[in-house]
Length: 69
Image 1 (tube, helix red, strand yellow):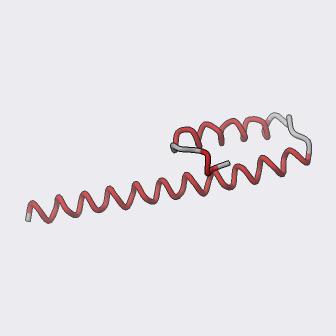
Image 2 (cartoon, one colour):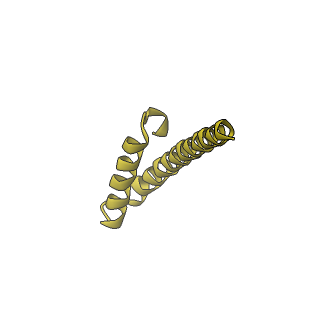
Image 3 (cartoon, helix red, strand yellow):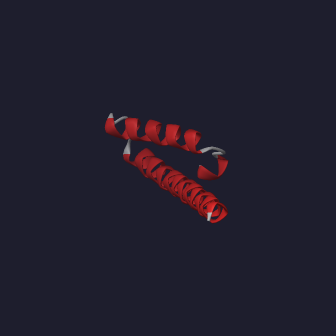
């Protein structure tokens, strides 16, 4: 689950594994539902990480621009 993923890289690696299994038709319908739920949580986790990183970068750039002015 996404809550167990500590880093963006780990979450992305797990998502890649899930996609690979889905694309290879390895999963039965019950497993597919479970994997899709896990993937949804991982995607949410990754999006949040990206939004936070984006906000931090914007803040740093704004502070740098203010310091130069």
